[in-house]
Length: 192
Image (cartoon, rainbow, N blue to C red; front, side, top):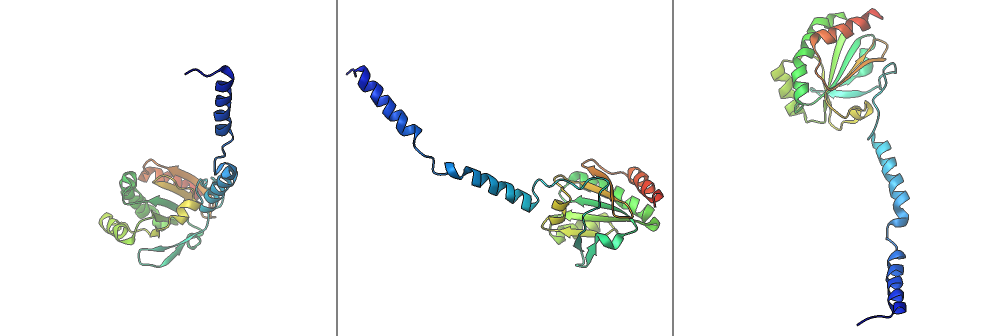
């Protein structure tokens, strides 16, 4: 059966018109959905940038493995190595003996390590600390709120903070060494 040109054209335009003018239910809501996502990411710290070198380190207080509060401000006047790590992170595990050795070498010279465990429960963290014979303070950031404030997205992440509370060095990824830590600590202590 053949349609005349007018009928076929009319049928095609009718189908096209019904498709073209059919509204997608959420079409008008797209700007609202987009803005909601942007606000959510900003409020939750997603996409937060790490604090810049030369700027003050964001203050925080976390509990250590014994449940005692430890604050960054408790260490004013000292060089602080602030390290974000986790027991499942292979580079973190590799650098912990280096951090421990540097801590032993420089702790009597106004140097402190604050190792912030990223989002884990106390039991595996305490076991790792015990087996690794770590003697510096290990803090628990179970909700990763401090890590978010520091813009940590990959582990390990380390910040070197001078005695005035200013971030002087940042190391993301990689593995710290005793020698590398020592060079930074000595440089920051000379600025006192």
